[in-house]
View: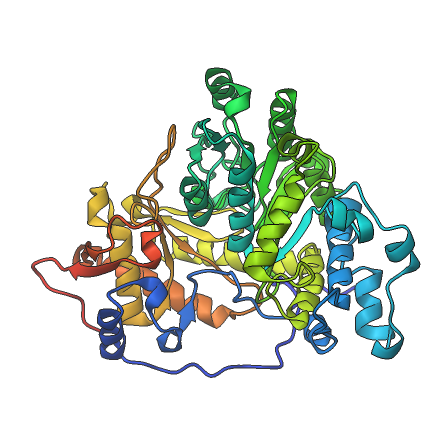
Length: 532
């Protein structure tokens, strides 16, 4: 019998590469000045590694490339529309692993001239779940394709603003709103309320592969008291963010999902998932909750979504574009916001058509929709998930080994506590996280994100603002070479942390989502800036 190796076996091959343009620190500094030190305005072509976000940046699989070639660009009911609806039912209702039968037929077996929808899709279309078909999707629409999750959020919040009492103040409790989700809520005059359970300590980095405290959970005691204080009729819905990107990417436990749904439903309050990283949350449940270790990722996803009434998903973690909003046909969400003369789905569908085009494509090409259908299925592939999580955990472990303090991860991304990095608590208006991020770009061409007082200036009622930087690792895009380089760069900045600048906002301070729009400038210490 062969001896076991101490390293994992590779799980993929790379056939397409892109050469990195090597820029000097002077080049990158000039570009930073030209874009007013706004991270989102900085040109990606001057970077060596880009960990700003995983959204839309992951590498497409060979099956997705095959699906792209079979895209149908028809204006109404392209065949990718049927494939996507079937994939959604596979993933969120049936617990099917990898692309289901309809996707496989379209990609591999069925020539374009002879393809037609299944008889069931025409004569007996599905209903009662998250993606009605045929006649039911016309009279009770509950599935809405969009260019990305942000657009799905727009439909959710603006659609509900059209149907609720304009005189009542509505609140949305959550385990932790992400930036655009919270901004959409505020823009529609709803009050977001962050109530993450802050009583649980961080798991030491030495134990992250075997233990997790599920710090992404919502605080159920706070939620129960808040419902009693405000009244159930003033709670628009309860939102669970999976995983909790605001709180260092920590996952939400299945127990918390179940108990949140039980509490909310006892008051006829819908539960809505911000499900951008639902598969990573399922991986955490599978890995860290004993009763789910024998269950497949696909089956865990099915159980998770059995407890929600609506959800928004961004498909840009699994493909380069796309998202959708879905709610359970004739479920709590549908009944709460519909009347005998006004169906909430029709209200949202009219907005979708006006904003993004025919509901068959939602502002996307037929090629994109086919890639979405495959990508959303591949998200539950255990091998793919394991590779991604292992790369993320290894990134975090190497940072710790290099002497960087405040490192946290639960497998979805790597976070560094800014106060621990600098060894002291700083004033929020110093924006030390932005100083760290800017110097990482200037000196080493590595871009990461600030998740702190610059991005989240408002903590929300009962809430607080985090103070982290986040390193998002796209699926399949980067090699260990990139990880080693980024670790060395961050560790070098930590060794010279007293030379890193504070940042000052020069315009756009009061803008919503100011991290996408505002300009800054560095304020270096008396010793001057670091030189390469």
